[in-house]
Image (cartoon, rainbow, N blue to C red; front, side, top):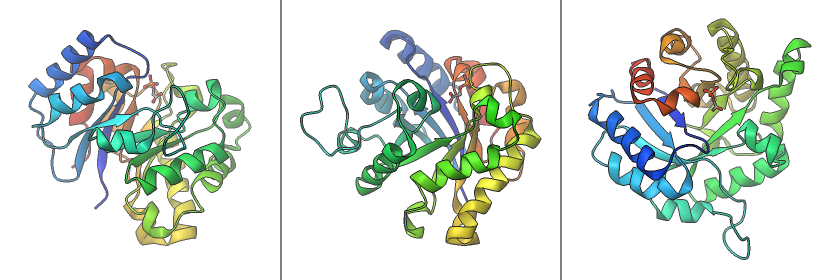
Length: 254
Ligand code: PGA
């Protein structure tokens, strides 16, 4: 059974005090996750250790970094390596968010190197893919996303992609309030699973969790997560509100 995951992406928001308050409020909700369900909190680097401490007694809650560098260590001022994150008890990292691609010039090749070093260090990537509006309007989104997967992931062995986490985030739906319909999400998720099935076989493809991201909120989470190939969400704006995100966690499929 593949995992169902509600992942919060706080991006570059909140002071330490605000972060602490938000996470404590969500923990206080005492959400009971079933086996195979997870809530993941991608918090800014300086808050990771504190977040780990806050969630340590909550079953199914984990932290994630929002990025990491593609080298093991060395003279790369300002960067953070996968092994540093692992040594801080961080199990996940978001790789290839569209904001990293757009503002920090991270291309598919750079991301493939990040994926490799994460896997080498047993840091689990949440790999983001998704098309811009012009691509959606020209109805070429399937090819666009397929290329992202091919150039960053499909060099991996089957054992490495088993239990992988992908986040499909159409760029036109991120932070815009314009969500893909549940049908559009399902269609793309099915396509992504097919791309993996063609390369690695159906068993591996079925083991991969594919999250939807882009204006997910409490009001639409249940419908989107209810689709067959949607295994939860990567949530930006709505993850900064304790009541909203708690409801989103409760909307995961059992
Ligand atoms: P949003 O962001 O939920 O604010 O649209 C999603 C994301 O960027 O991961």
